[in-house]
Image (cartoon, rainbow, N blue to C red; front, top):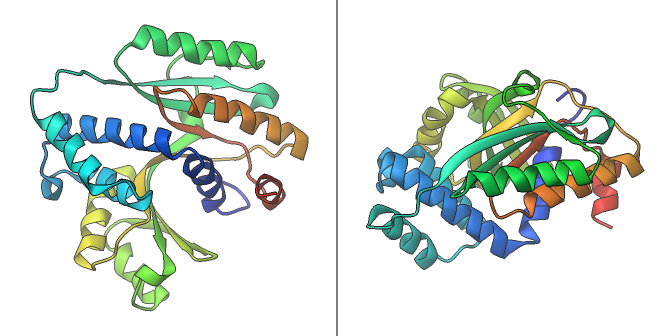
Length: 250
């Protein structure tokens, strides 16, 4: 994203999620279920499940809940989730990319379309906005988890696919091509470094800057999507400026 840290968008999103812990737990349980059904219940051989477990730990989800979700997905649970994406525009030309995990696609698409329509946006065709985003692996690590010099740490990871490394406040952001996600994940585990969160994100090639009032209205729309039980992630190309973060933090 041109002109500012990618951590700004992620920080905004995580702040909103942390305020709704129950919904975050539900989304993580869904992610665990899909990960187990796709790649098995052994985290050591399932990068997606490892990431889901680490993310559960980051939001203080009880270990018993995590193990119960893994056991249920690996057992005779017949709940069948499908992963679907939706793309569209919010007002002022802000691109919105929505990732869902659902057991009822008709319900999900109706809900997503209704939010676009009620907020002055428009649901587009699948693939219509794909070119605006790059699919990347993103790891957030608190500075105190890295026991070696940051420059040395960055150099160490370049050989494993690191593309960008940013440090802002007490948070380090690692960005790699999504295909290298598992490789970086394994290297961090080898270095005994716990992540604050890890996952595949859609990072915009360019961001759109709006006035504070316009941006806050867009963020309210994004929050409406995030509150839907079928929505796992919402990505956008709105430039989250320091002014916006300050306003959100009151």
